[in-house]
Length: 283
Length: 283
Image 1 (cartoon, rainbow over the protein chains, first blue to last red):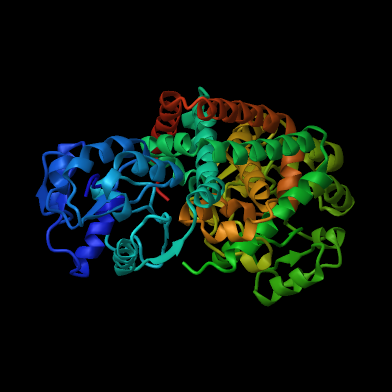
Image 2 (cartoon, chains in turn purple, orange):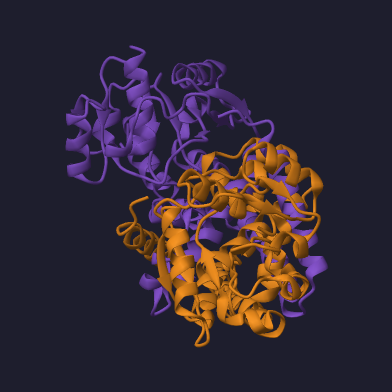
């Protein structure tokens, strides 16, 4: 396991709980987080680096922010065994697939790109828990050259964690998550910063109710992870961000002209859309 | 009580639970909601209209969207008793104070403008519950001419509901809530509409995780109430909305130029701000 945070750590805990793995070796950037992961029983051994961690491994999870994928792939490629299956948990897929093509070379057929749709606003090994993936979706984006048995193994691993496994094309995945995940994060990070810039920010927030707290929960997410996601998926993100800016400008115009009819219709359509979306959700 | 929804209904339930009121008369626009409120024990009697409801009342709560305040104030003014204390629960204050000056006339000294900082995304009598105001802030914005004993009575009523009572000037109140409440609602309503406009909206949302659900919770709020708030408080709202649009444009520029440093710094500052704000909050 390269990167032992919320995502990788929860994956390891779930597999250990199911007795699906025997010995987990972790590598990562901060010694302190790795030591903590070992104390928590997430990993059994700390490796000096990524290259050392993958030696003799049957299965490798790349669990770091997507911006680090190319470098880590280049580091491990010479050391990965000829039967080792590799997967990742990156939040974007086209760029990860491109990096794999470039850096994993002879291991490409055993690399299965994956994205578990789960997480909290916390990060690090301390935030990991075994049931994070229960009833969650995991998207696999295998390529033409991906070996069937590698896909089957990765699918089984995620199902063992309690997840439902779906498949998408990388570009399709990236367009969907630009809309439902990356845009909302940019919208909320920007909202918080625009409030935080005010000299009276602290006093302001003392007056806020529960609505704001729920809305800005995702602003607690890892800045590094989200920076990498936004840059990796920038073309899809810009398209949805521009649609959002247009919508805000429409709202602004309705407010400025006191056009209650337009504003009421807009809010009503938002409420109806949210209600429709919530119907099929169970968890 | 004029308007027996989540806000007014919860106020009545809390006062009844504390045995602070004996007979609650309700008026409102929809007979069905009033009948439901009576069945739920929120009100004891349904009045034919606002003017009838206030006759013989010791205490009047105006619990409807702020856009209806002028009309309702004009309707009740000729029928309110000479000792009756009137309060409201409107989400904006300067416009409510202006309406009171214009329409409540000889009753102005006994009108205490108030705003309870509580609510859920639900509305109507069905959504009301007695503990809504426990440990919540209620802002009073009394004017120079407001009678002290009227302020004391309204303060005691809200404290009986379990709330903390604070005072602000109306303009100060409106600037604060434009930032911490009205802007976040416009941002989220617009986000939901921009996603809902897409032909693949329904499929998209099947892929969303918990983050989006929390973020868009407030898009379930009453469209009519929020339309009125945005129009009533439009000058303060436009100021914070423009600051938000600027921040989003900065984020857009960083994404478009793949400026990871700027984007990471922005997200980090949002995370730090959210963490600071959360510290003093208990509930």
